[in-house]
Image (cartoon, rainbow, N blue to C red; front, side, top):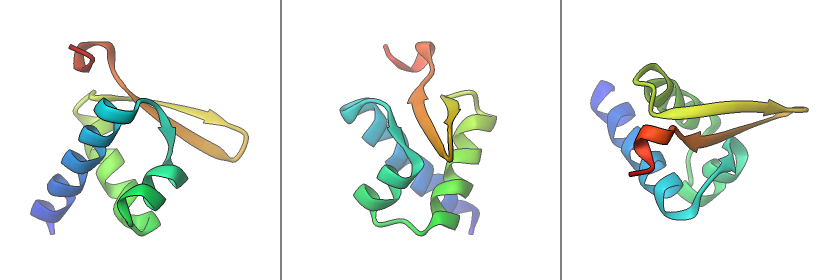
Length: 70
């Protein structure tokens, strides 16, 4: 399971690097992830300080951290 979470985190990272900030719901749609898959992978990236997360209303938005925008 950890390998899958890591792979999903990589897909999210690549999507954010290519397309810029987006909500978790958008990422779920774009990558065909379940909410659980998206949340586990986002937690992985957050723990590694690779993403910034911002809550706006009921939505959570993600963007790569400044060090990841190389």
